[in-house]
Amino acid sequence: MVHKYEIRVRYSDTDQMQRLHHAAYIEYLEVVRIEFLRSSGMSYKSVEESGYLLPVSTLEVSYRRGAHYDDVIGFETILEVISEVRLAFHSKLFVDSTLIATARVELACIDAVHFRPVRLPEHLRDLLSGTAVD
Amino acid sequence: MVHKYEIRVRYSDTDQMQRLHHAAYIEYLEVVRIEFLRSSGMSYKSVEESGYLLPVSTLEVSYRRGAHYDDVIGFETILEVISEVRLAFHSKLFVDSTLIATARVELACIDAVHFRPVRLPEHLRDLLSGTAVD
Amino acid sequence: MVHKYEIRVRYSDTDQMQRLHHAAYIEYLEVVRIEFLRSSGMSYKSVEESGYLLPVSTLEVSYRRGAHYDDVIGFETILEVISEVRLAFHSKLFVDSTLIATARVELACIDAVHFRPVRLPEHLRDLLSGTAVD
Amino acid sequence: MVHKYEIRVRYSDTDQMQRLHHAAYIEYLEVVRIEFLRSSGMSYKSVEESGYLLPVSTLEVSYRRGAHYDDVIGFETILEVISEVRLAFHSKLFVDSTLIATARVELACIDAVHFRPVRLPEHLRDLLSGTAVD
Image (cartoon, rainbow over all chains, first blue to last red; front, side):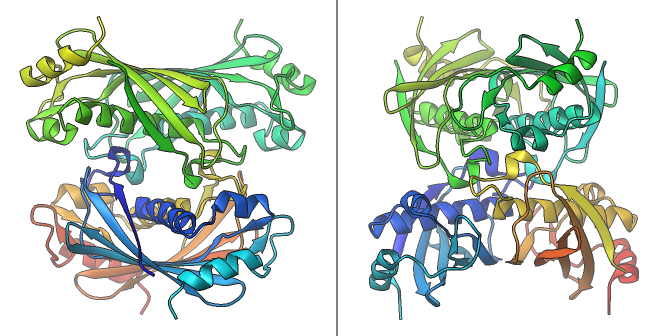
C-alpha cells in the first residue's frame, strides 16, 4: 500500500535561503507517519497510551530540489516491517510532479517505562502487516 | 537586578523575509528565563523535578526592528514577583545598541500532577525575592 | 466575519510538560492568518510577490488551558483594520468547546525593499474591508 | 582536525517523550557546522554574502540514546571535502562520555542566483583543505 498525504509549506518553516529549511522536512515526515498509522486504523496517541513509544532510530534524507513557501508537498509513503521491534517508513516527496526529496525513517519500539526495546504490540503488528510491502 | 544574556540568531530560525521569525523570539526568551534562574542559583530542571511546573500564562511582545542571521541579541531582563503564584519577566532585546524588541512573559506556578495553581516553592520565592525589582 | 480553521497538534510541537509548547501557538496563529487571507481571496504569497511584507509588530497571547498532542484546535478569528498600514487578527482557540487561549496579533505593512511602513495595497484593503469587523 | 562544540538542550526542543525531539538534532548540527566554519576563520554569513549557498543535500543520523532537557551535548566533528562542490560533516554526539548519536551531513555549493552547483569559493577551499581529514 502506498499512503498519500499532502502538507503545505508553512512560512515559519522557510529560512533565509527562501526555501523550506531542511530540518522542517523531518517534522513533516513525522506528521506523515502519524497520518499513515491513522489511515491504517491506529492512532499513535493510543499506542503511547498503551505504554509503547516509537522513537526514531535512524534517519536518511536526500534533498534534490528546494520547496517554497505555500507549496503543497505530496508524500508517498510505504511501510517496511523490519522485525518485531523495528519499522521503517520510505517516503517520496513531490511538488507538482517533481520529486524533491526521498527519506527513510526507522523506528524502534520501546516500552514507555524503561525505554528498552520491546516487540511491537500485537494489534499494531497485525494492522501493519496488512499495509506493509513485502 | 538586571540579568544580561546573549543569544546568536540561528539560521534555522530565519524565515524568507530574511529576518529572525517572530515565533523564534519566544523560544529565545525561554532560554533567557532559564539562564536567569540558573544565575540566581536555581535550575529550572530541579524545579520540575521537585513537582512544580512554570507554564507561560500570558505573553506580550513588541517587535521594533528585525534581527538578522548571525546577529547576537543581547537580552536585559528583570523579574517581577506578582504574587505567591505568579512571576513575570520583562526583557529588552538589543542588537548592538539598538532596541529591537520588548517582551513581558508571565508564568504561573502549577503542580505537576494536577496542573492546578500552587504557591511557588519557598526556596524559589526566597531566591527570587532577592533578584526581583520592587 | 468570523473565520474558522482547525489545526491538529503535532508531536514535534509538544514539550516535556506533555502539552503544546507556548511558542508553537505563534506558528499556528500564522497559519491561521494565512488561511484567513486565502479564504478572503488573497494569497499571502502574492502579497509578498507584489513587493509588500506583513511582519508582526505586536503579539499578545493569553494561555488558559494546555493543549495535548493530537488535539484538534479550533481557531475563530476576526480581523481589525487599524489603519491603512496596520491590521490586527483576534483569535479564540478552542479544544472541543473549551476556550484554551486568546490571541491578538498586529501586523504592519512594509515595503520589501526598504522595510519601511507603507499603505496596504489597495486591492488588499478593499478585500479586507469586506471581512473586517467594525 | 576534530572540532568540539557544546549545545545545551532547550526546553522548547523536548517533546512529550521527555527527550530532545529528533528533528531538533538537525538544527543543532547546523549550529555546529556554522561554528566549525567560524573556528576555521570563515563566517557562513560572509559565504552567503559573496553569492554562495551551502544547502544540505543528504542527511544521515543514527540515534542511540535520548538526550534530556538541560543536558549539554558535546559535538565532535570532522570535515570531509568530497569534491570541489561537495562537503560532508561527520559528527559524534555525546552526553557526559556516552555516545548518543552520530550524523553525516552532506552539503553542496550552489550559486545564490540560479541555485545551480558551483565550485566552492577558492578561499573557502583553501581554508577547509587545512582542516579536513584525508
